[in-house]
Amino acid sequence: MFTLDYVGINYKNGKKHSINMPEGDQHYWLLFFLSEVYLELDGDEQLYESGTAILYAPAYPQRYFHPFLGFSNDWVKFSGEDMGSFLEEINFPLNTPFQVENSEDVHDRVRRIEQEFFMKDKNSVYMLDALMRELLLHLSRLYNQKLGGARDFHVKEQQFRQVRSIIMSHLDQPWTIDDMANLLGLSPSRFSHIYTSIFHVSPKQNLLSERMNQAKFLLRSQDYSVGEVASKVGYDNIYHFSKQFKKATGMSPSEYRKRGTVT
Image 1 (cartoon, one colour):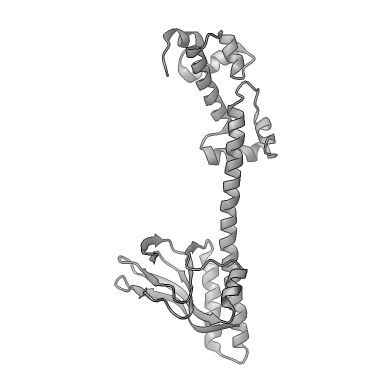
Image 2: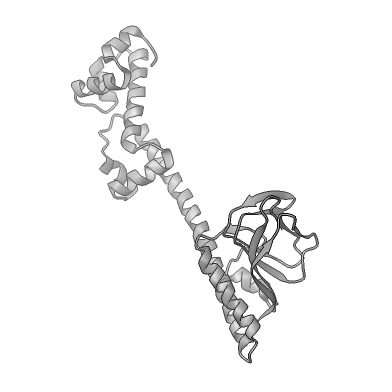
């Protein structure tokens, strides 16, 4: 069961006020910052945004401050039997700052804990235990959802890079957005959205750019006719290829070959 030593709401600290506990504390400290704050972790000072949460383990060094504006925060100081195993079970990160998007919700939860802490009726100990578990479970869920989202994005990025490599290695194929999307089992709109967010260019524009680059290389370096070059970069219509090439380079394929100019 949780044992609360103290809880504070919206504590304001001036710019000259620095919390510095090199030896840490014998309790757990949950801090939720309502303003920007500098945290020192492993000797490295870094500025964190409002809405940052951190749970310090017992005996872990604590130092936080803001030398220009001061800072404000909510905090809960607590202990409890088997606390380490509980936090490990819910995968709560210790000594690790993380951003909370709905900061007002977390602030309200700490406020409820403060109200119960000072009420001190016969059921307060049970209510505080329930409220603390709820708060930590809520923060753990937010942290792990964000972490999972980052992992999911990393997986998607790897998949999209593989698909992009396949597409660009087969420029002679008549790729459509539907064809590309089918490689990952996505809708064309969803595929285009994720592709653009990763590569900062639409799949259609990326494919066109790579086709034109390959066409310029073939026109400069190989003894292919314009029709053969068009076919090798995915065009079955030489007129359409020539029109796209001139739009991209400012000259026709024949003019480009004749000039031998890199554009």
